[in-house]
Length: 332
Image 1 (tube, rainbow, N blue to C red):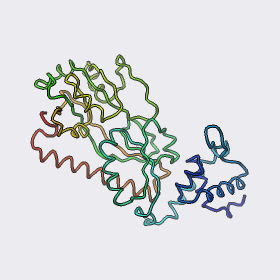
Image 2 (image 1 turned 120 degrees about the vertical axis):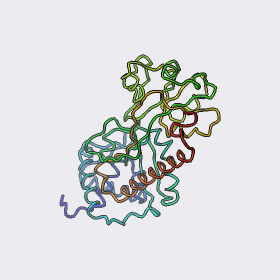
Image 3 (image 1 turned 90 degrees about the horizontal axis):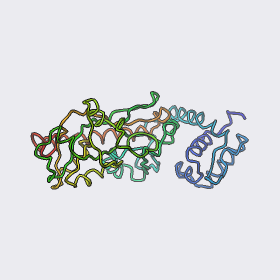
Image 4 (image 1 turned 135 degrees about the vertical axis):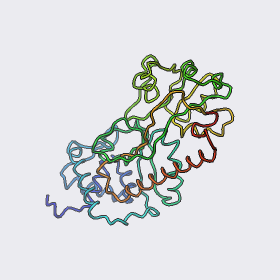
């Protein structure tokens, strides 16, 4: 093969084909017709003297040769795009690009609505595909199959780029008729039945065991360091659930303050500061170095950072307007 005669577009086709595993989805991602994509695959097969993608019972599957080529092709395409793409080449108002973003349920509840609202104004044809942590692995991100992850990370590969979007504390949600409301101290907290909520890591989550509370997160780690533990009655992976479950007057939900404050207008719930210290956490955005210089990716990262600042500013304004004590919520 004479590399000097190689059509660079074919490498882009191969990059997207191997990432998507589908001629139809690859064509959509590149903004070309399916016949054009099929013709590109035919030329690639001739060029590499390998079928590259073969049809199996599970769909299109990459050959061994294709799997070996994938990281090399991704790196070449990314570097070429960084060199050849002008700063102002990406036009969000005209783009039909699909961005795949891994988000925790926490990020979806607090940040995603603001991102989507702005995108509908500035890039109405852009498609956002939000996927859960259970759907993603670090290799998926590393190879650029996922554009970015917005999450709380205990650890992340050192090669990834990352930025902190904001910091958040914890608050407790209780039914106003909960008998613990009037004297919500540590003894009262420990005597309650609790709602546990989290799903932040990569990979499939398995069932929880109430007798094995180690590794459950910031709240239970803080209690463990105090030599005690809470009684967890409900485990959930969705941050919208605790507000519904806390309507029971014998349950307490401890969750990020931004999520708790979404219930500030709910007349049946009250927000309390936890009666012990729980360290704050950071919501971060992380992405592969392969996509770092991509013009469209840079645009989206900038937009997300700006919207995170908008959300934070609105939160501060609400707290200031509510007056003293509002940082912990009503009744804190």
